[in-house]
Length: 247
Image (cartoon, rainbow, N blue to C red; front, top):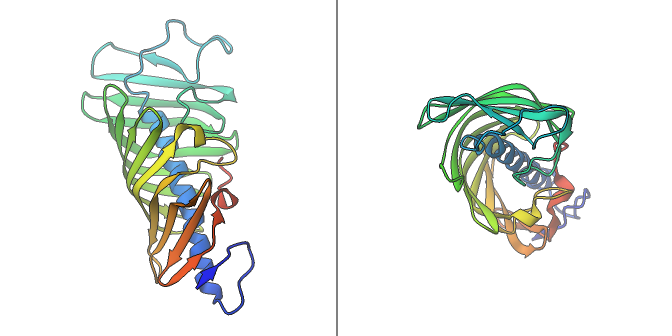
């Protein structure tokens, strides 16, 4: 049976089926947001510091300080108080505040200091990872709190010229609880843009409820997805209609 998820329940379809399908969409959005924010911070581990420290808005997004040339060192990230759009291209929203990344030569550990996304949603948690020195990949682990969202990450992001490949799991807490598994999810750089980051390939699978629910990003594509729960399949659903308030 095919179901159109438009906020209305199709005739003969149980409310709980539609609710689980919609929860998978919201949870997947939250998991992607947590992944991108975590990657934004940790992928600055090996970024060379700015020659001139911030005076007003005179340096990048973020402005970067590093207290040593070789490990161990601490990287201080300064996003403008009024918010700025990160130069990495990983975040389609403003970041403000600060974070520090301690690098011991093999593991990076993040401390958040007033970091906010969208100027309204505080970012906190205990995040660590192993970023490649050339910025091509990062293994992410730990807990993030993003406004009303909670996420525990065990993922890998691999950066290519045209897209980012995401694999691993994100346990999402809050209203839309469950474990989201990224299955070879491909997110093109050009699609990390308002109204929301929209993958073009791969899938995310939500478990933790009665049935696993799968979101297929390639079918039908172009920002529309198919959601599957058992033998129930949705029509093409606008993925960004279920975006978080973070982006």
